[in-house]
Image 1 (cartoon, helix red, strand yellow):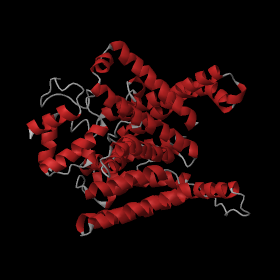
Image 2 (cartoon, helix red, strand yellow):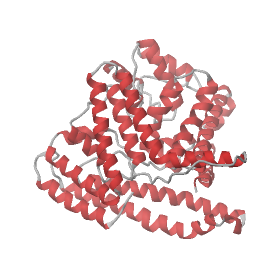
Image 3 (tube, one colour):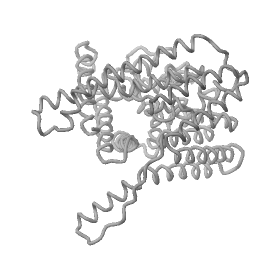
Image 4 (cartoon, helix red, strand yellow):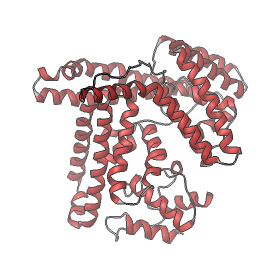
Amino acid sequence: MVISYLFFGLLAITAIIYWFTSNQKIRNYILSASSLFFIGFYDSNALIVVLSLTVFTYFFGYLIKYKDKKGLYLFAGISSIILLLVIFKYLGFLEKTLNDIIAYFSFNSGIRTIMIIPPLGISYITFKHISYLTDIKWKITENGSFGEFLCYSSLFTIYTAGPIERFEKFRPQIQNRIEYSGAFIGQSFGRITIGFFKKLVIADWIAHFANPVLNNQAEYPPLIVLAALLGFSIQIYMDFSGYSDIAIGASMLFGLKIMENFNYPYFVSNISQFWRNWHISLSDWLRDYLFFPLSKVSSKKIWTVFFVPIIVMGICGFWHGAEWHFAMWGVWHGAGLSFYQVWLMYKRKNKKLSALAQKEWFNFASIVLTFLYVTLGWWFFI
Amino acid sequence: MEEKLLDFIRNEFLEDPETELNAATKLISAGLIDSFSLVSLQVFIAKEFGKNIPAPKITAETFDTVNKMIEVINKF
């Protein structure tokens, strides 16, 4: 997320103009104009991507809604969006991987590597657009007007780091005039302050100690590295949930309620619950548009319990960055989800184990174990 | 519909089939069923009642109790 003087300056100016305008449709265009200015200021390529992708997706949304062969249009729309993401974010990675393979087998020449800088917010906007098209096909959202979709697509408060809001929840908020309330300002400032505290005070303070160790792990004893990893676990939560607080708080200034992204994820007793409470907008997205459809490909246990979680979480890892270590982090979590399912199946068949799991101390131990598992997983992430 | 859903949940997901279960019992928020179970439930609903409920409508908010499930199923 780009947190800057420009962000807050633009937030204040846009909010003043927004609330002095009485027509919600014009307000939506004011928000869109500010958002496009913000995106274009930091990355002119991203501005072109946002504008062209918004026109493209809106057009495909129209085809899915009003024409026959809805499935074909959905497939074409989603494939094109994914192709765009692959070109901008993963092409360099694919070329590098191919070159590494060629070098490994000692062939003489590699292929030319093109350096592509991914446009700002490309990962978030593509996921938002995929959900938009799919939800139209599933008849759980209306297409909305182009102005509403542009506002959703570009909203600068959530553009660069989410939450990955759904159009289904966003559109009803901007369809009719939002009545001004002083509470918007109070709530907004409160939430932004909490976000800043988490980010600048807690996360940055922990980073001051943890980063030097994690960047030079070979120079420190394993226990110190583990302590730094525990610190990083807290740091990344405070950092990311702090950003989400700022994004949600900034949106509140316009009377918009954006979905929550974190819900005390380190106080849960299993990895499945962790993912229901960590980066909720992403995990919900993965659940709805990947996990559910993939799980129905085959009813065989080996597929649903082992392959699907690992594939979905591997993609989740790659979504975070075009590097193998991110994919490994995802696979670590996928493996955790699989083993948790095996544990559940085993527990269902074993009454003694089931009774043991009801004990308070067992629940506490499960919370600690889940936290440690997630913390060890961060080692792949850094 | 209520009985069929309760039977399916009792037999497929509950650790102890003797556990008290009724149409108002909280299932997702109480941790009795998770995403893996919800996929089976989605398939069951499609087969049994001929209703394809999209995944975004199968959440802790909308599918937490059998009563809520019936509300959603009836909308589709």
